[in-house]
Every structure is written in structure tokens, then in C-alpha cells.
Length: 325
Image 1 (tube, rainbow, N blue to C red):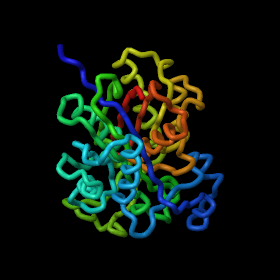
Image 2 (image 1 turned 90 degrees about the vertical axis):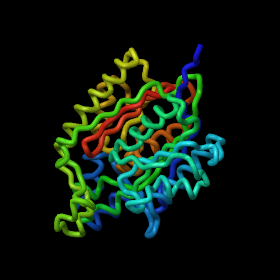
Image 3 (image 1 turned 45 degrees about the vertical axis):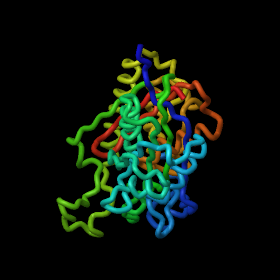
Image 4 (image 1 turned 135 degrees about the horizontal axis):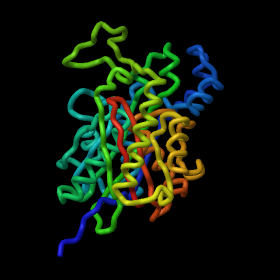
């Protein structure tokens, strides 16, 4: 009789750049205020990568910590997936660059670009690899240097984003860990949240070569709340669970209002929701693993807890993961 194989998270890690940009400091650059930003987003500060510090650098720090916490040598990794929209270079992938720095040469390594849903997508792919027997030990990373693509004169976007990285080590196990993942996308909403830079499409005569985030904030908010509600219901139904079974909600840290709306849908008190958006803003693909590591290292999340991870990002992309930690 064959034994079912699951993937379990055996270690997490995260890293934030040293430089902290507070709302008050940001208000010296653009017409805004600490009160305006906090009221609309819940953000108080964000971390900004130093000059010359790359997405790969942040990923390396987070990955090293995750491996140490998992007590896993890099040479044991047989799959490395990195979620990012801000790769170091077009190619090789940042995952390949990270693989070499870690000394995990030889295993499959690739980037996933699903914007803010990048880590959830990467986790879903890694879970499938492990369940199929194609991998035993996977390193999944979400890392971004989004401040490199901001227009610091546009207060609707520059107040939102920050830099950071988070990572998780998954290993094959007979005990259930990742119970299910649910991934979705709808490119019809592309114009609501995007960056106009492209290789094959060119730069479209955009100022600064178009290296900036373009966003219709109110519309993104409406779609995000609706789709996250749907994916939460999908996740619960797929696992035949009532929402009361969830111990912790670990959401994408984009906006406190969106987080609160999802918590309300689950009838979860905010005390059971991991919130870090105030400390580092929206770090895109790094957001969920940063929150996950914070929850683990702070002692809030304990072994056996049932976690609901979810994210929503440009594409639009969205997804969830139900995890028995």
C-alpha cells in the first residue's frame, strides 16, 4: 500500500533592508502625511534597499536564515523557486543566481512572476513537485526591490511599497503540511495594476523608460476584496472545513482595509490575523513569507496550527494555501 506524500514547512526566514523610510520622512519628498497614509493603508514605514543591494541579496539573507531554522544544508535542496517581479537581471533567473550563492548547484531553479501572489504561486508549484515525488526538499522564496520601480512624485503609489524577502523550506513528509493550494489569474484586468516596461513590447516612450508602478487604486481594492472572498470560500470548501477551523490568517500585506475585510469574511478577530503591513508596507511577493516568518519567530504560530495564506496581485493574480504548520 502506497503512503501519501505531503510537503511540510520545516523552516522559515526573512530579511528587511536596514534603511527605514517613515511616513514623516516620505512626506518631505511628496505631498502626503503620516495620518493620510495610515488612515488609507495602515502603513507606518517601509524598508528601502541600499544602493547596489539587489533582490538576490535580500533573497540570499532570507534563504540562509530559513535553511538555518530548518537545519538543512543547501546541498540538500533539490528544487529552488523564487517569486519576484524585480529580478536582478533578465537572465539568468535570480533563482539561478541565488542557487549558486547558496551552493545548491544542480537542482532545478527558476523564477515565478505572479506579482504580489508570487510566493503563493511558488509554494503551490513546490508542493506539486514534492507530492509527485519529483523533489524532496524545496526552498521557496519571495523577494522584491519594488522601490526601484516607483515614481517618488506619485503619492498614490510611492507610499505603498517597500523592499524585503522571505523564505520557507519544504520537505516531503507522510504527515499533512500543505493541505491545498488554489491559484488563479485574470489578465483582463491588466490595465488596473501594471508596469509598462517590457523587452519585446519596448518602453512605449514612457518617462524613465516606464520603470514605475501604474495603479488604479480604488478599482484594485474592489476586485481584491471580491476575489479574496471567493478564494477563501474555495479553500474551505475544498477541504470541507468551516471557517472556525482556521487558527491564523496570514494575508498579503498590501492594505489594512483589505486585510480587515477578509478577516471579517472569516469572522476572525484581528487578534488571529498576522499584520505586518505597518512595519514594511507592500513588499509584493515577499509579503506573505515575511508575515509567516514573523508569526513563527514571534511564537504566535505553533506546530499544529492551521494557517490560511492568501495573496492578490497584478495580472490580476490571486491564490491561497491552507497549511497545517
